[in-house]
Amino acid sequence: MKIFRIVALSSVFILGLNSCKKEPENKWKVEVKNPAEKVEIIDISKKFYDQNFPLTQFKSEFPWFQGTVSDADFGKRRADQEEIKIYKEAIAKIDEKKLQTDLQDLFSHIKYYFPAFKSPKVYLFSSALQMVQDPIFYDPKGNLLFVDVTGFMGEGNPNYKGLEMYFQKSMNPNNIVPKIAQIFAEGFVKESPDHQKFIDMIILNGKIMILKDAFLPTYPDYLKMNYTQKQYEWTVANEANIWNYFVENNIIFGDDHRLEDRFIAPGPFSKFYTEIDNESSPQVGIFTGWQICKAYLNQKPDIKLQDFLNTDATVIFNQSGYKPKL
Image 1 (cartoon, rainbow, N blue to C red):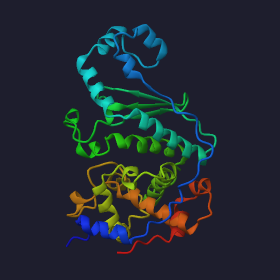
Image 2: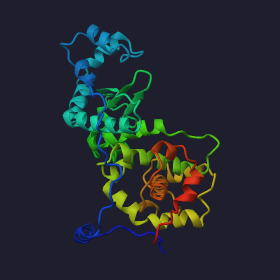
Image 3: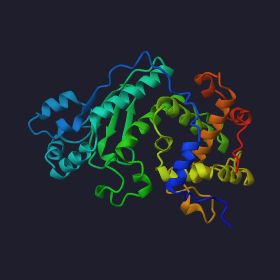
Image 4: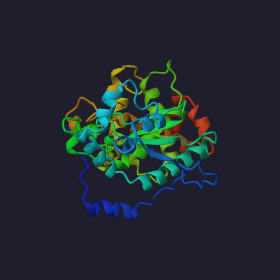
């Protein structure tokens, strides 16, 4: 017998629930009086593929972009029609003005909680599909943020043929800002090498998710999780069942390294080793850690964000009172 509920709600029922349910107050919607510096976005590939833009000038302006590629090969790539085609298709899907506005809002919220934060210089570029699985890179030394536009061409794009569908689900333009928020959130959360139990891992990720709540107060939760709406609904509907599974199988304080692969690492689904696996959403451990952290903050409404981030995972769990109801 299946212990998990499958989400199969009609649109009428969903609308009915939404109309009756009072939305909780969003504590992360704050008035930002001191916004971050104006975000500057530079499209490197626009100049790279422009044959009228001298290569010497390009190399002078972006000396780090060529890397170890020879001048001859670098010149050939500029004229590669297939690469140019991919770049043009990818950049056409990006609303740069909206991206600039959204990043301005993101960086302003980061600065609100971490006043020393400085907006990075943002570079868009095309890797010609070579970096699509890891399309965002941040250089803290130079405070430079790089976004590979070919990593956000949309789920099911023909250029992604052969790439696992679970990767593609978060390769849409609306995933760019949440993924950038993830990178900066990770930088504010310290991982302790001597705390490697499952509870430590899910609370670590829960703290990162709380920061994404703070940095992206108007974004839907499913995007913060890199989920589809359907995946998010499944996880919410099965929150208590997931928790019961963890408890009944003594997983919470387990230290089996395989738990990370089963419930935290990206994948097509979570690995409960039951008949429900293929229908489940991936990374349910992250979702659970997020809910525990939310419960803890509800118990400690006056705690400062930095103090919360410094709180031990076991303390957060013990004081959260987390126990979702079936």
